[in-house]
Image (cartoon, rainbow, N blue to C red; front, top):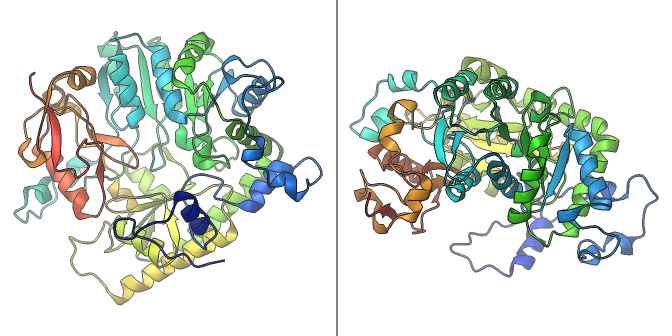
Length: 538
């Protein structure tokens, strides 16, 4: 296998996309990122051939163009499924314990849009976690919803009592709060919000988060249902839940009404394939969901994608127990070895208890290294070890794992962390301000917007702010203005500010720190990030 030479697209002239993909995917680069099939040719071949005799090479090599068709006779229609596609979706529903499951060919995004539209009315009110994916905000904008926010668990107060003002206002108050891990949503906050505001029509939370943090869905669903309100769970990163005792149960089994899963994130399925499930006791939402999926989902769904989704479900149905047992053992062995490295830290159960996080996804490896920021760790893994992680944050990286990861893949990651450990031991960093906390759990922080200042920050609804007249100005001079656009880190796509919120000094501090650590701000019309659209008249 060829050693890949990592190109810098900003300074090097790339070849065509297909040629680059061919070169990259035939190299020794290993993916600790989505899609969950991990380009594992052995597992993919097994997925398409198990249960019958091995097909000849010509037939195997017909993927994908050789089976790319449209809605011809005998192959059903996704938007009016009565035959083979209905059976395929019923297979998924049976596996996850749903009343009904729908294939999503536009990814989880179209499922989130459909679910929120199904459970709310135009200009209604939504109770949502502030750390939801941008797709939830887009649904809010299109539906012209008023939002009430739920803020993740945090220990910000303790952090703000830390000393060490070096004269920089950002450092004194907001140091290391940016882009760090958000904790769980508190059930008590859901109860309080629903009791205070009976106009709320639905609740939306993300569990697990991009960092693998879960909330108590069972308790939250009980509270929502006591107020006659449906619970929508964006479980995009939890499609692998419920198939092994070492992993959490899926949100459907915990009482959620509508659950969205991205198959491609953590299972062997192609990018942008996902599922929307309706709970056994939530059948009233079925026709509404179908109506809005007809609007938001493509009218030309790929049969290549749908065939891959069905094969993924059939593989889990037939061999899931064996595959997840092997996967669980690989994770256990890796974490045991990583724990021996004194300067390398993974999110642990101890961290979870200390930070009052409800539960974590054991398949998400949240890794920090003493004296290194997340960008430095990711660059070392990429350029020195040819390992690509899912995300780099200010103080840590996320390595996404799945049943498709191999023993060799975990061995390479372990050896790479040993090499980082050796670098740290050889070049110890004395500057305490540069070092991350000793445990990854110390990075668990909520978003900076707290319920205490929400009324000061939220000036207009998202729909009002996007519809009003805008002007463009320098971001550094925009303090006090009302944002007319989103500003977010991607991944994971959680907005730091949304249209209608006031731009604060705090926000600018966050953006400066992001750039100092090598991360990128997205969402702004000005790709350079120097200018921002603000509302001209309020």
